Image (cartoon, rainbow over all chains, first blue to last red):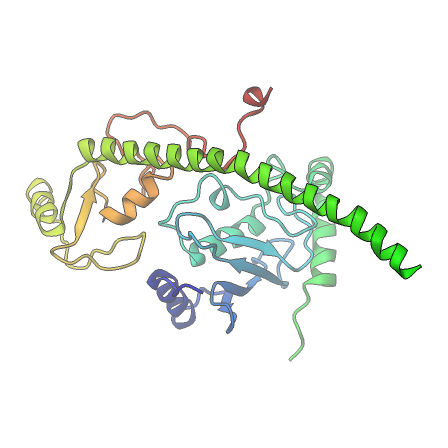
Length: 153
Length: 151
């Protein structure tokens, strides 16, 4: 495997030295481009209290191309589909090499706090969200309790 | 009986193997030049883009750019400026490109970004080539062509 670019080394160091509150990203020992990520559900959102696991992979041409990120924890959200794929502009056409792992994860955390059913990825969820928002939020809370419960210490 | 089976195996399998090898060879011979032609076209196009960039956005040493910026915008300080693409600090002799929006990147980093059909500054999304219309990222070579072209 080619040597790890300095940029990735720097980002990884900073992630561990100055972690973002409510977010953790730890690279695998055997593949330093593959990160185990957890994001706390934002307060005052249906995901509050949940701990969401994601996987993040930095492709060979990172940072010219965006990281690949996917939810591993099941989540009821109009912009996240059942495979955990995320509909977020900065992960696709609005990617810029000035963005970093930490800023992308912050954007994903913000997306949890501001679901956007007008730009859906999970069509059924977006539909439900538009038809009866309070019921959809209730479902999201149930899914959070059921699938994103924190491991008890 | 075994002899019969092995003979029929030789009669059936060998020619079909031969035919398969011929087909694979034909496909490779037909497609290889096409791929390399595509690669060459992409490289040529990228080269053209960089030439265009060279004529519109000068590459220079960081120290020269910083002096000019300080003259045009007094009070700006450049002691700890880093390139957001590679996260490395600039040294005085770093070869850089300073854009019209006053953002600065290593020449190598920016050229890599621009040659991939990205038209905007990584920091503020203003056009890299001054005066160019702010467009969405133009189509990349590795994406399938639009349906209209496929028909």
